[in-house]
Amino acid sequence: MEGQEARHRLLSAVVEHLAAHGLGDVSLRALAAAVGTSHRMLLYHFGSKEGLLVEVVKAVEEKQRQVLASLRTDDPAEAAREFWRVLTDPALRAHERLFFELYGQAAQGRPGTTALLDGIVSRWVEPAAALERARGHAPDVALARARLGLAVARGLLLDLVATDDVAGVDAAMEQFIALMTG
Image (tube, rainbow, N blue to C red; front, side, top):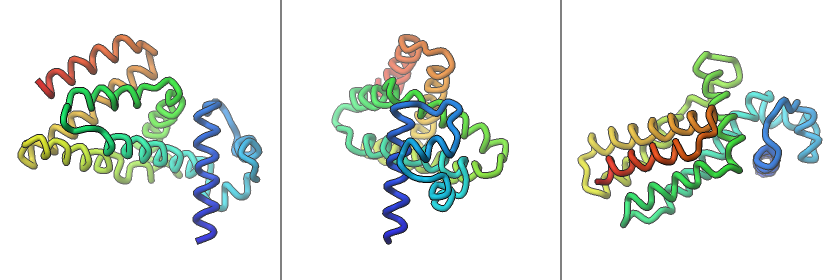
């Protein structure tokens, strides 16, 4: 149990450091020094720099899923807008870039990153589908709508990371929300 707590503390420190400073070209040694540990401890707990970054992405996404679970469901359009505001928070931009960088590497089979693909869709689709079922959609329709929502959100987040066009992606998301809730 003590090892898991140490791992969790290290991961939390790394997530916070990357949120504050971004990823850039940080080395494992520099990252370790910034969070008050050694690169050997990071290797012990995460196996590699890529393994650590995969865990960072998973931790950030878990926090985002917790926000999704906490949203009001009585007004689906406002809940979607609130969640979009969370996802597009400028403080998370470095995490979004990291997500897409690692996602691409994992999709290409780069060693150390493929674990990111485990549940990359299902961990989001299931909770979103539950919200859709609560709105009265049949299970198969709820799953399809949830997957569509995930695809649109990720596509617009990639657009945001690539273009930094906040107004453009916000307008596109507003149109999507109107289509889905209207």
